[in-house]
Image (cartoon, rainbow, N blue to C red):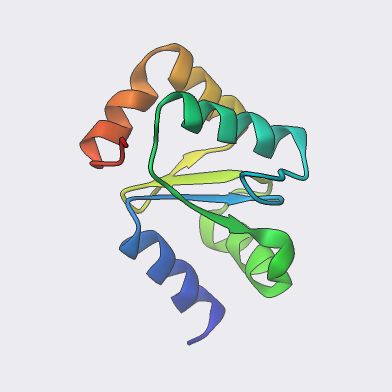
Length: 106
């Protein structure tokens, strides 16, 4: 399976995927850490992918998503955005609705 097929498989087989620097327990950048905090505040069920563990995926995802930075949050196969967008959606109450629609609330 090539890297694009792996990305597609991850976002098609998981309602919520967070591509981040580090892990939820040990984020390796402030933006990834803040995004994890927002998802945790929503009681979201999500798959986290540490982009540092897969340099090929890290580079391919930038062109796949047409989004140059991390973290990247996908819900129901669609790119939601990075930390600022996720935080804004959370503050407006929209993120919880998106997660509920994806059946991704614990």
